[in-house]
Image 1 (cartoon, rainbow, N blue to C red):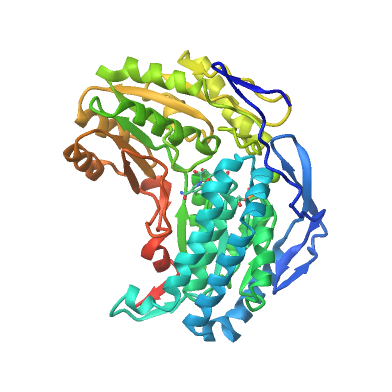
Image 2: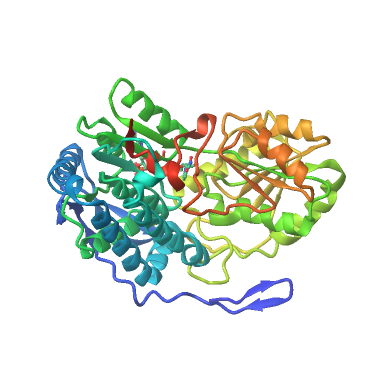
Length: 484
Ligand code: NAP
Ligand code: MG
């Protein structure tokens, strides 16, 4: 492997080992505490987007398989889980967290292999946070009466959970941990391109001794998710994914008794005021959009810079961007890994072409990228008009649309001028400005002088077309409870 050259610095390759990874050639469905073959008899391939090599074949669950999983979840709910004491429930959840922690290296490497995300992120962000979600929710399981004092609370029953490919294990943890803590049983479907860590999680769940049927993992694509949404014996739909699919789901559950939470797309604004500590802000902007290849629902994909510091910020951004290493996700030096799939790379390149056709000024870093696999150089779109599709639409890749502003009122108006409302970031030296901006930005999370910070205790979710309902914190538990 060639050495990486950055501004006179040599970095020798530092690849994470894969020798401790145990992947089966073929994975079946995890239903009722067993691995069962799909009645469709079909399997699909999951590949490593960094080199396009096959990782494993995975079962494609059809309507019949989903029905089997829902029946198992219903039986487990009626006969076991709803009668299990809260403190016993907590023990299982705690055990899952511990088992995941013990195997965290394995989870991190498999996540990087299957999703293309850098090992630095899967090791330092995804896996520890996923463990923490189980620990956090284990803590609440026997304290729900204190979490919601003077309320009569009841679990819902069977939760159907559908997750995307950008944080596969973490999203599974966000969904499963609160569902179990509140006494529900689960049928979870991971995304087509990233099923492996959810299947590894099934192994851990099995080892934890959780009663059969309490958690069922069904892999698939296309009709699999819809079969969960449309199943009449599912009491709750928890969905994280695109706004387009979120709208289909909301239509499908209309008129039913299904409780629903939708965590959807975003086009979040990062705002740099002229008094901001610029180096720190530039680092935050870079983290906000290039973290996880821009495959982050709350990515700071629109940057607003106050006019008087615009030139300085752009110069610093370009300089920092050119030091980022794009390449092998398993190399510990890599800053930006592989785009999750060929389809997603085509979508991103499609937007870059739109930018070219619109005649906007673009700047791409000059770094090398590997010859095979799916990669995209980090890209700035400069001085782009509000009407551009690059400003209006979620690209879900390492592309940052930059605009300027003069006054606080102007930037609030511009930042809110989007159908989304997931997150925002504010960079300024003045506390009063932070309070002014954060109260007026219509976004579920607003970070001040930082970006992309997550904690299991703090709720996460959107305004407008970014969805409704919250995950994490006490609010996250509420989504799985009936309250009187
Ligand atoms: P997606 O295409 O909406 O898919 C999400 C999940 O839904 C996948 O498991 C998918 O299965 C399944 N699905 C597809 N069509 C369905 C249908 N008709 N009924 C039920 N399920 C269906 O989204 P994605 O491309 O995987 O993920 C990227 C999106 O997720 C971005 O828009 C991002 O902003 C959003 N996201 C939001 C949050 C948040 O918390 N707000 C967090 C992470 C990601 P298959 O793809 O396997 O067919
Ligand atoms: Mg894959």
